[in-house]
Length: 216
Ligand code: VGL
Ligand code: ZN
Image (tube, rainbow, N blue to C red; front, side, top):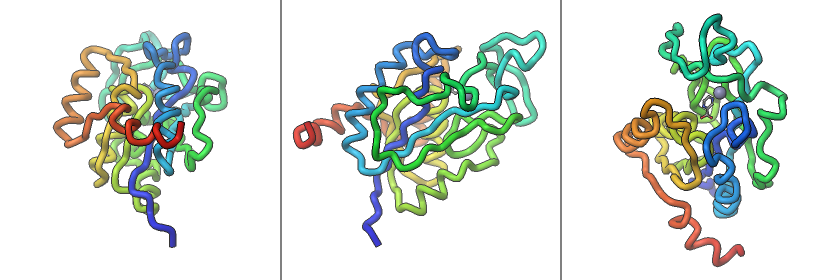
């Protein structure tokens, strides 16, 4: 058997709807793309995620009469932010950015596909009970530390990092390879929660200083 690769780079939701001009635009979201491309060359094992909702998805504000985007609503599994319609399955907005170049990515995890449950996390849906299968996959391949980047820092990246820790992995978030939505203090809260969970906060140069010399 091949020696397991213990470090896995998890690239979260680098999709057009989260880019400037997209349906749920994250400010400067496009700036993560070249940083992630450089980082990806430092990792032999890369996993991508894609937010991937049916048009009838419970997280979409227009699917609730009288509700507006960015309001919150109580659902059977808890509080849910209502978002603009975004990342609808098989639409251009759900596609990965064409300048994302990670040819060696092994797995794309699509999440948020259940009509009645959202999933910020790449590991566990918002009911906090339904697994995506990613934890099992990562355990199976011998992963120990998950390095995270992408969009958005305070939602899908943070929830994925917290769930990586909860599943028993070490986790490091590469802050300059992420951008945030920052809704009602969500970014501050996300960093506090991540710090409390023992998630490491790093910068891309700390990873790249050892590698770029060899690969560029
Ligand atoms: C995300 C809100 C709704 C994200 C996805 O990728 O952070 N945020 N769906
Ligand atoms: Zn979504």
